[in-house]
Length: 190
Image (cartoon, one colour):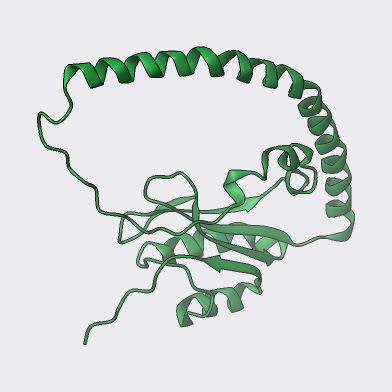
């Protein structure tokens, strides 16, 4: 479920169905990890405005030539790299399918808890600014998602130690497995 907070940041509160996608990630080792799992600070830098005629036609033309040359060099390299990694991607998908089937069988018989992620995205939507992982009984995951989505509409950050959030988590019997945020606290003016 997507929620927009008071500052216009997008939050997603959702129940995760595919833990095997986190368990089996051999391509993550080759690429340095998956971007959606990295948390980066949400600090906006002031944009520098350029004067109206600062770029002349020669500089623009040179920039276009360099961009075309760069594309002509990188495109074959990326295509070749993609073809080389294709068998590894197929192996990763096969392993994820096997791990997923095993995880589903365990969930059916052992009544494993559900995972609920509360993720705050940068305003530019390029990466995470906050991630909280919660564990809750499987039957209570959907109502917890709805409750937390309602709470996030009136906040600018998600903090499990906040009294209203803590009360909701206690009521649903949710356990905070991991909480990491790089969002700054707002200064309270009195």
